[in-house]
Length: 131
Image (cartoon, rainbow, N blue to C red):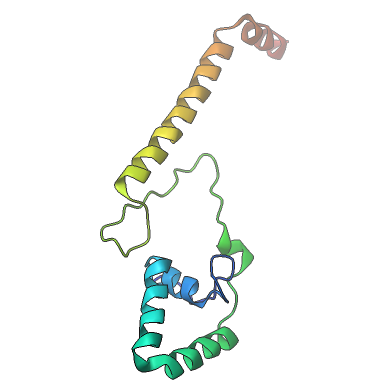
């Protein structure tokens, strides 16, 4: 379980209850939606509707600072691989693609830094700083 239970209307279909539950329990949103619809169709319809309406009225919306956490550029981003299909996270192939993109971006930055340090502009800048 992760932190406080909130509704997540930005990632939800109706009011964000299923998205909030999925985020809280570390599950995929689609799985929580399937379980909710299955419970509704298997005869628990009245209970599901009442519980959903109660959750909409009781649960707070997810605060803005928790919706999108932007990490500083110097911090390493967190990479999570799914251990089971219903858990949240990325599949191994998605994670490898993301890591490949990140390493390519880092390599481009290092190449730019090397080009600057070995250029005559760097020597001129250093000479001005010494004055």
